[in-house]
Length: 305
Length: 226
Image (cartoon, rainbow over the protein chains, first blue to last red):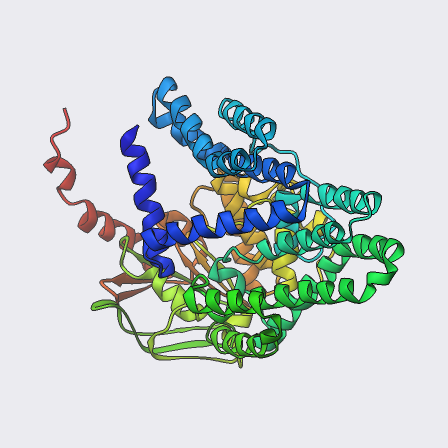
């Protein structure tokens, strides 16, 4: 069992290495980022503990993919299998539990810890034949696949919007809108097999424009209800809302272009740094987007033209 | 017509293809045979433009890859994409309108099911359906019969014949000699990155016997089966 965790650690280190990060440095940065972000989140919203529970449980569900579970069951004795599942789920939840304790939110911490351990006994992410319906089937694949993996986030986002109006908290409303964009951004984080780019008979420019157009259209479809709701109840904050809305689109475009600017390789340190810098100072996007665009055109030309 | 001249491909220092010369004409079916690792898949990837290479590949089309339907040995499918959506994606990619899908679903695939949950054979049939719906002019089929049931093998063989009469260019690799013998006009033998022999239809049976003799030889006797 220990060998299994050593192997997991080695695999993670290799991934970080491939990303161009020294593993130890990456772990330190992750811890700092996690606690920094948590601090910000808890200072801004009273609903942060609930969001924490959702995120941590979501991560532990990701570990219960059927093929993965079958593999573990095949390799280990039943007792070892459950030990592995419990340790894995606990490790995933640990940073969240620690932060909840630091914030003296003991009940959510206990609930989270109990639930992730309970999840170790179930296969929550199954490959059943049930097909989750999606409104994005006509333009596969990012949104149709992504929507099915994250469909539960959208009702949560809409409920948060409703709560934001009820408690007259505009920031919470903006957060719910940004949550939609963060989720849609994640649809473009996964690198598709080269075959799927190669299959397109479009030029690299047309290919990119089509990708961006689809992303903008579908993210509008998902975010528009929130925007309309917020405009109706916070019309004095219209300007701020529009700025965040446009920023959501801008980062979506940036991530798409960043992905193809290095394709068929994964986003690396230079792209990551540029995106991170733009998060601190968004006007930089005016320069970053055209840069990623020109790099993407060059990269895709070798495959498409 | 696709013309390959002096095609070479290196992976690092390892030369996988070494000075390949070959032409593929319209309305003909070509078989490529060779051992595992002889360079068949690499050759297909080079023709399709998925690999950089030395040499020259010319065709009647301005961008050859836009007219090629490539069936991979192990087709890859996204997580949580239904078969119907996969077909839609592949048609969108070639700007082809997807119409009457249910009547064109010749393998009776469950199109509402996630493609990634399909069996190996079903995945192959789905990928094949996709490249047929794309209305390509050239078809490169890497192991189209592998993992597919007998009934579907018969359908695929008939499909290849139909593509031939429709003046399409078809290139197939297969380890199942009978299927090649049934569908191909000529077979090319690839060995260590070079074509060592071209065999026409009337010589197919002698090729099979020859291959059997050279491939098997007395190998089995060397293994001490008790």
